[in-house]
Each structure stands twice: as structure tokens, then as C-alpha cells.
Image 1 (tube, rainbow, N blue to C red):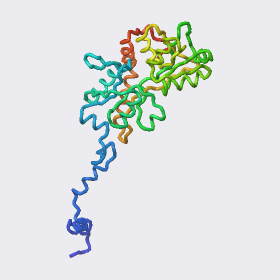
Image 2: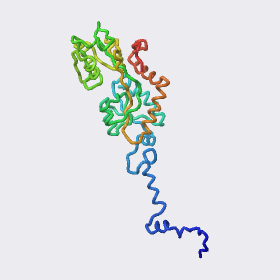
Image 3: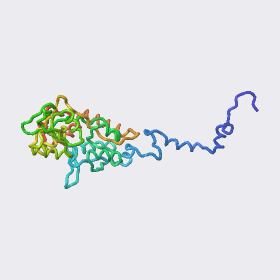
Image 4: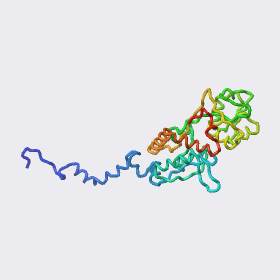
Amino acid sequence: MNDGRPVESTATDRPATSLSRRLGLTAVASLPMLALLGPRGARAADGPESTFDRVRNSKVLRIAVLPGELPYFQKDLVSGEWSGAAIAMANDIAKVFGAQLAYVESTYGNSVLDLQSNKVDLAFALNPTPVRALSIGFTDPVITHPFGCLAKKGLAPKTWDDLNKPELTIVFDIGSLHETAARRYCPKAKLVGYKTRDECTLALQSGRADAHIQAALLGLSTVGKNPSLGPYYLLTDPTVALPSSLGVQREPDTRFKEVINAWIQMNRGTGQIREWLLEGIAKFGITRDQLPPNLTF
């Protein structure tokens, strides 16, 4: 009987509880809602595993490796072991995740496809072009990579205008940023493209070319393989320098890229990335005093 004072309701008096019983709902039924949390929480039960979770769970970091692309990659044909600046970096990143490295042989172009098809987690030394950014993600820049050239004996260019002459033949590998730079800054020269950088090198060696446009680390590597082609010249007015980043899979969960960006900022700040690159260049026999004085990373 109600005497006018408030009456404390019981479980059997609560309409919501009665409704729940009539609908056959229980508290347990709400647990699957945890799966609807965003990518930084629990992932959906039927959704793809993020790179961050996959690497942490499997303890394996898959990277694209490029045969013959020093100073980043070198494969010992006898032992099958990989070395180079990118391998040193990858090993250090793997330690952050407590993971081991797994190698997937590729090329610069195919490494983009390997990321898209979930064959690798990281691809090294990629310029973040707008076209590439349509399909993969990029980290912060690992280095800012300046451009220059190798030149025939007697030609010592300092600026792009020194090459922008009708009597000079300039070579580059087709579809690369070397081609983009040559066409923009040397439009008056005779421009010839080849499928590979090695073909460009042969053209320069045989006298069919006067200069070969290359980014600094690649150019220094070429001199290491063919000392007679040196020295390497950085070109100015303007200085052309493009960021070189790590490629990652494009995905809603950004934790993996955030970890890599933190790693990049720390190792750039301490100068460690520069040391890894110089050690990679040294594998060619290029000493530090042979580097262009205005070369910075």
C-alpha cells in the first residue's frame, strides 16, 4: 500500500527490465558491440587485421628488398644474406616491435604493388608522388634527396643551366623523377630515355651521352661501381631535392605509421639515419671525403 511516500522500485517493477525479458534480451547480448569500436580499439570481427596488429601478433615484419640497389640493399650471392642502409634501418624498426624480418624481393615500382596486395608491410626509399599516394601511404621523409648528375670528362656542371644546351645529350631512366627533372630543367638539351639506369651508365661510358641525371645516393653508388665515371656533381640554381619516405599500406588504423614516424624523427634527430646511409655508400669504396661538400641528408 502506498502512503504517499516515494516507493523504491525493484527489478520486477522496472518496465525496461520487463521489456527486455519480453524481447528475450540479456546483458550478454550487448558484448558484441565492442567489436564496433574504431580501429584504435578492438577491430571488427570480420574486418582485416591492421599492419600494427599483424606485426605485433606474428612478430614478423615483411619488407620489400631490391637486389643491387645500393646503398639501400645488397645481397650476398653466396650466403644469401642481405645488407645495406635499408636493411640496417629495417632491423632497427623490427626491434621496436620485437619482430623478425621477412624479405620479399621486388623493385621500386613493384614494391608499391606489393604494399597494395598485402605482400609487404614496408617499402624503402620511395618518393611520395601524388600518383603513388593514390594507392599507398607514406611516412614522414627519411631524407631529403638532392639531384645531380654524372658527366663526361671535361664537363664539370654546377648548375642545371650548364646542361641546358642543344649540343649536350642528357640521359635518364624512363618514368623516373630523373626524367621529370631533366625535362623541366634541361629542355634545350637532347633528352634520351632508357629503361634502366644501367643502360644510361653504358650510354655515358660509350660516349653516346654527355650527362646522366641521378639522385645523389644513386649517383654515388654508380661511381662506386664504375670509378672512372666520377665525380658526382650536385646541381644548383635551383637545388632540386625531393623527400624519400617509407611506403606503408593505406588503412584506417594509423598506429603502425605513427610508430614508424616516431622512429624516423628520433633517428634523423640523432644523425643515425645519415650514418646508416654513409655506411651503405662505403660498401662501394666511397669515402666521406669523396662526397660533394654541399651534400646533406
